[in-house]
Length: 263
Image (cartoon, rainbow, N blue to C red; front, side, top):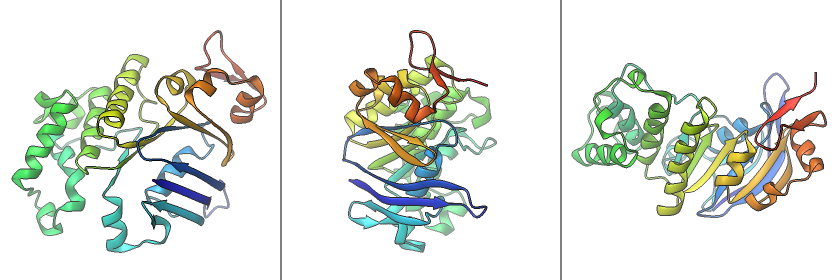
């Protein structure tokens, strides 16, 4: 289980990105974080994975406070937490297979990983991950030869190489069209259901949230202002909507998937 207690992040320029955030993510849940750009969604995920250091608070992962770990202890504990990025974060000139194998760096001796040498077991695991994501034929291609949807599948395959118990997905479909967005989220849903991997995913659009989430938290200016389920999202009131997206936000048409801001 992931437990976040009173998490606060203040950047060096004084920006308060997170304010006293607390929640629990039980094992096997698909939790989605919603909110406008700048609400603290990415900061939250990056604090949990310790890509950035929190200012205050606890991040308890299976009984261990990640916020207090450093060096080898942090690297070893973080191996069980996969990360998927909005802009894929692939090495574009390297092959798809090499990018996927990067997910094993936390398990591979540094001297071998520097030389790009991985075990036969790791190679087999990488090919299995690509097979599972439906792109085994892309293994030898350069990452920048792939479409956006294919690149994000490589990102998921790389995360799978960590054999994670938790996957953090930071706006994983923000740069994809609606059809590809569903395709990627279906892959995450499959991992959640079949492998019981917990998912913590940030998203903008409520139509996607109500389709894939089991639980939801909403951030506004770094604070949690909403907690609910996919069913609650479908029944969201205008007041709740404005708590998350601001008093000037309006729902667009019949769908609650989009928002506009009055000038």
